[in-house]
Length: 417
Image 1 (cartoon, one colour):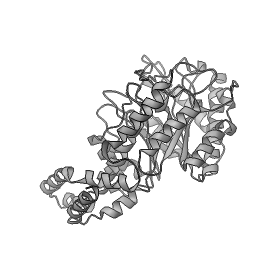
Image 2: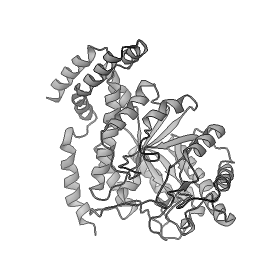
Image 3: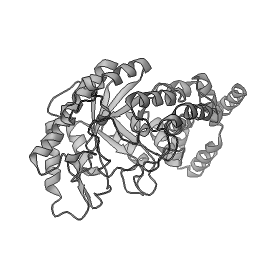
Image 4: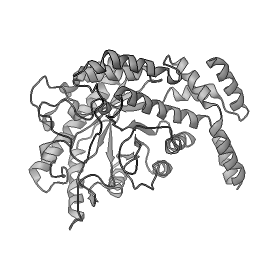
């Protein structure tokens, strides 16, 4: 039945000059960077673990949270087995493994991530990385790289300098550049009396972090903005304008998180603008519900528009797609599976649109035809193509993956205490 439906879909799309087989060939080449922190509610494995802070919160208490690096990697393996394609895994510094020794974040080294690298080699996945500038005693005041205390600021600078070396180690070992993204929670709850000086300090800190040149064969440096957060409602040091300006002036990658803008803004509308001025754009795809709530990604209009902007602008190699959501109210392996499969579905949907024809109608002023076709293609049988793709990639078709998760939940996740 899957093959029959696929042949029907191919015929439908071929009438518009769309080569479905070629679309699937492109889809296979697009990696999604899957965030490890969905699996353990951003807890990490530090010996001196701190409570979540920096405006980050996870709600829910569904059983089965990963308690050890081994459990987290095992959970990731299950999710990867249900997701078509070859992808990446994104780590935070607090997922270091120190063999029970207390190692401060500014002292972390590549050796503390050897297990992750060996696992990535076995799984044939790339690794991405983030220094962790939250959930720490020296971040309790809501300021890190912009802190007025030079010693505290130096601690976080050293952490980020070390993180670049760890990320470069990932890239060198795995043969694929590691994208290292810096996000900080710095800001003020109430109206500041000085907006400029904290940003001057942040700029100086970033300049110090990036002082050493590291080959892009191993490391891709990115910075991430935010409009507001819990505890920084009135002012965020690393605003959109700050980081976009810094990235463009200093040849860094600007990372856009779909939840880090005003509720009426969409990241899909920003992608084409950024592509005109920078070679690479990075994304953290999430689902904000009224604010930066990091819900599991669903196949909604914005996700489709993000994928469309990547595909129709021939930017598959220029947009680095990462995910960033965390929901502890549902099965965490299922959350990874749902969100990542939806991101891939959106890319497939975009690959099966007649972009050149739609552009021509726009240039010709044929807005009626443009709108009509865009709406008609929403009900074209891309689902049949998706089922075929899953079948060819040896992952469950349709909702069949739920059986695997339920079995794993029964035998493994529910056993965890």
